[in-house]
Image 1 (cartoon, rainbow, N blue to C red):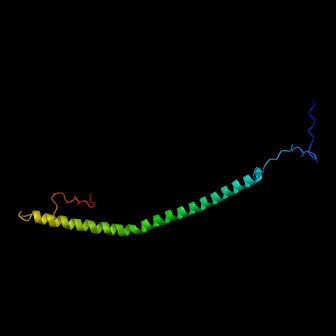
Image 2 (cartoon, rainbow, N blue to C red):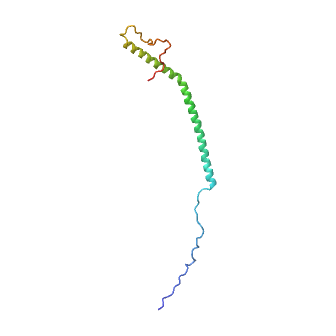
Image 3 (cartoon, rainbow, N blue to C red):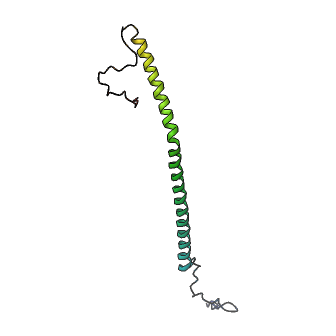
Length: 123
């Protein structure tokens, strides 16, 4: 018995063409564009750094001058505090030594007139 013979044939109109060309996607910007972008970012960064340095220098100058202008005020405040402490010490001395005859409050206990009482108060 013989089976009817049927040969496999191409479809009508033929097969599709074989795609042999490489289909690579776009890989991004070129090297000159990247170099230009990096250069622009670095230039902007150095610009901001220069502006920041100028501002920091100005703030430091302002701080120094404010401290210079505050010195007389701080010295006067220190003098007032030292005077207040001295008067409080004199009042305590008067209270403690009130029963001692011949004791002059605030007088020096040293025989040498070259001795000066300390002007710096150590807390």
